Image (cartoon, rainbow, N blue to C red):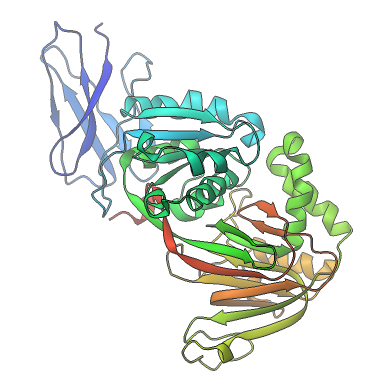
Length: 429
C-alpha cells in the first residue's frame, strides 16, 4: 500500500486549518471535502481516484484525535476551526525550554514521545534547551537573542519554569519587545495551575493542540516588591504567605522522591507542628468593592481608603486567576471570583490560628465552600502590603517557588501583560 505521509499546512475554505496528505507519486492527487455547518464533530474526508479513506474524526470539545484505516501508523494531528478572535497565524520558529526534572524526571520523555512529533508535523522550527539548574531558564530568557524565537517560547514543565522565563523577559532592557514574545505551556510539572485555570488544559497533548491551533490569551502580571531588600519578583498565578509558603519550603526537600504527592506529605508534616503566623497588612479594594467587615461602597482611590488588618492569619493568598488545582477528584478553586485579565488581584485572608481552623478551611476548600466561613475574608484589590510581625514566617511563595526576603512586601499589578499561546477551548465562539 502506498505510504501515507504528512506534508505542509494549508488553509482550505474559510478559517479552516488542516494538514494536506500526499501519496506516492503514482497515485493521483486528492481533494478535501468540508462541511462548515458541522459544530461538535467535523469530518475531513480525503479522497483519491484509487480508493477512499475513512473519515478522520476530530472532536473539538474533547480534544480527541482518532485516525482510522491507516495501518496503525501515527500520521499526524489535524487541527480544525481556529476560532480565535485574534488572527494569529501558526507560530513557526520557537524556543523550547524544557525542565528535565519536572514531573519526577519524566518531562523529557513526554516531550520527545508526545509533544515534539505533533509540533514537527505542524511545521515548527524548534531549538530545544534543557535547563541544568534552578535559575537557568531565567538567565536564558534574559539574555537570548529574541530574533531566534520570534514566534514564541514554549515552556515544558510546571508553573516554576514559566515564572523563570517571565522574570527573565521582564528584566531585559528591551522589555517592551521581550514581553510581546508569547509563551506556550506544555504542563508536565507537579503544579500546572496556570495552564489548567487559564487555558483549560492539564495534559501535554491537549496543550500542544492548543498551541498548534493558534490564538493568544492575555494574562495580567503582578509584581511583589520588597523595597528594603531591593528585590522584585514577578508572577502570574499567586503569592502566598503563612502555612502555604512553609509547605512549599518543606516540599522542595522531597521533590525528587515523591513528585506531586510531596505537597501532601509536607502539608501533613507542617500540620502536626503548625506554628502561629502574625502579619500586618493593608489592602486597597477596587472602587465600589464591598468588604466582608464593611458593606459601604468605597469611594475613589486615595490614601485614606487603604484597609488595615493586623493579627494572626493561618494563611494569606493573593491570586491573579482562579488558581484551580490539577490534582484531586474535585478540582479546587481557590479564588472563584477571579479572572486572569480583570485588572485586579483577589485577596484571601484566613484569620486566626490553630490546626482545627486550618483543617476546617481545607475541608471547605475541597467542596468549594470556603468563602462561606466566618473567618475567611475575600476581597478584590488593586494592591496589598504585607509585613510579617512574627518569627515563624520565612518567605513568600510566588507561582510555587519560595522567595526569601525581609521587610514589607507589596503586591500589585504591572502595566505589562503576558501573552499565552492558545486559548480556552470552552470559550471559543
